[in-house]
Length: 559
Image (cartoon, rainbow, N blue to C red; front, side):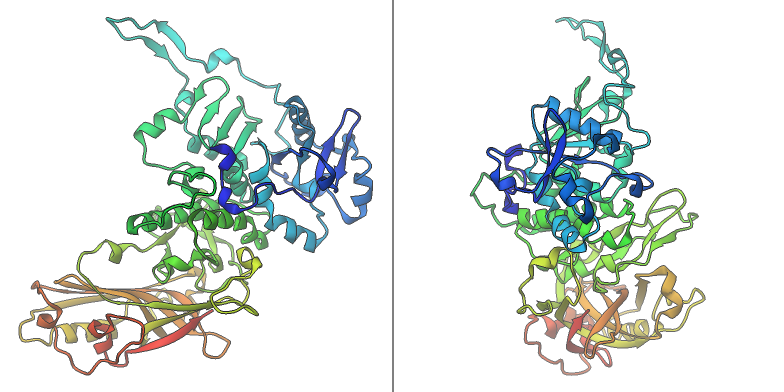
């Protein structure tokens, strides 16, 4: 199973551009890998430390010298230990990012970083040092006494009585808890290295641990995942990428059903939040450091990647938001960065990352409220096309995993323009005019009783609330009728700099509740005008939003 891990990437047999060759006399950089027979290599996953400039790196000026010899006395303790482990395991080739990617060449870095998923996926094994360079040591030193971790048999089990064993608390540690406790798991780049590697040995902690597609084990206490698999519904990092059974080579996976599509989106959101918690030395790397996971997830599920989401999940996946309620209200969240400017506004990559002093973060969430409701869908927006610069519509360029500049999506919405009063926080929490229209419309029937409506707005950016416009356009993504309550969810938009395009500001949600339950929509409402027909949306003629003053069916392009 490990040999077939992420086989859908289509990169099996891929050879890195460069690799370190380990000989009895030293190490050197090899750039002619096609000349090597039976080429097999290991890869290193590590932290660069507080001052990467002090670390030996491959530069344009040292490329020729490194092909002759790399000075051993200038290598960090992590590099020398990784070399020792590679030799001990019987391998002579090792891939280390800082020594195999030309660090002062933007073109080389972009090309190699984009293929990092293939590098780790094709390595026989990844050696991961869980501590930063200033605290990592030789893996044979500072090891605890095995008796502190192995189970102690106090009484042997017999046919008439159970045995008594004493275990270390770490004996029941899951892979998730182990990863959370390691400094390496606080770094964004290492997430794809941990997920995409078919096998990883973790060094630098008190004990060595082994993780592959099938198990997570401690060198002393053995399998740490067996108990979890029998009692937990939580997925490991690898299971989030592929929770369904892995298909045999050359055997296509069956298409997912509706519940599986929902699970896929949920697992994708979990991966995103696991990534968003991690730190980057350069905020500009945020898209690239996630590209390997996106490439593997796309290959696994047969989806089309669009700036952090999937074409097959649009338009519902546009209903993401930054969850402000899942953490303690007394924590003061601050912006870590301003988001990625090259990402389209409808992508979560364009939003700032928020964290508090306690290192908690505001997670990304997708609205599933309407998807869980019974009843009839009155309207659902329709994706018409996506376009990249200099690329035919509905086709993606090779750079789609890491370069989002110019990506647009065009959808058919029901839209309505509203005026928003400015609240005391600078951001309007509700829209009284739209609430009044809904109450008036749903209360117009002779059969209907009192109606209570609520419309609420959420901004994508806490720090930009003071600049939130007073005039916005609501683009309806979905509306639903349950027999007693009307629900809708959509985006709030404003015109973008480019003509006839729109940028996202946040979400808009609303509902209107009737005291009496009606078995049909017509019994609860009175049409006040003829509704326009939609060319693509089958149920637009049932829409309640279209009965409101100023509402219309419209095709909008989001940037």
